[in-house]
Length: 207
Image (cartoon, rainbow, N blue to C red; front, side):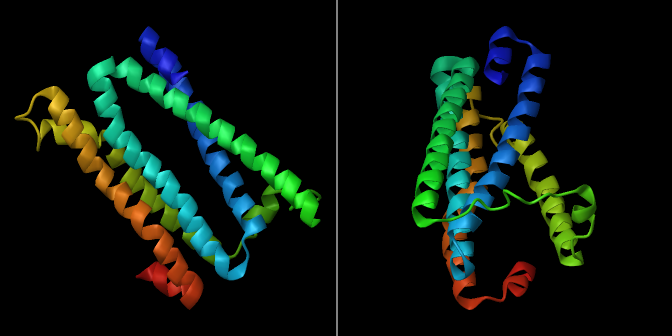
């Protein structure tokens, strides 16, 4: 929808596509985390979650570096259709994960987690204080990082790289934007392993 909206210069279609993508992407992340908790227990979880986040951040790095380069040769529309192709490959990987989970789960006699569980809004509101503090932490962090990331390219182009040609400035801005996610991609798995080994999760969270 977003790529087609770019093709047709239709803002409403682009915005609708972003809404669909956001709902689907975040729901997929929750489902992936549930899948990780199904297969990794105890002192394996933080490393598994770290590796999962690392791959996601590596995708963000790839996008920041690759999209300006593709846009330079194929135009903005070409970069959007490349994103669409990557989304299709992610969909295929998800379906493959479901197949592996089902076949291996049946082979090992694992029951479906939560298949008989009924969750209501009242249960969510009864979550402990620590949960709500973590929610507030995540919301406040993402409210700082993601809005900036959405305008970072234009900000860098109009300030630090204003003396360059537009194409060169876009590539330089993409490289600069990728640094944040590159640190996350490289640092999260070993840090997750340390947390698995040492424990002290809340203290590490404060630090």
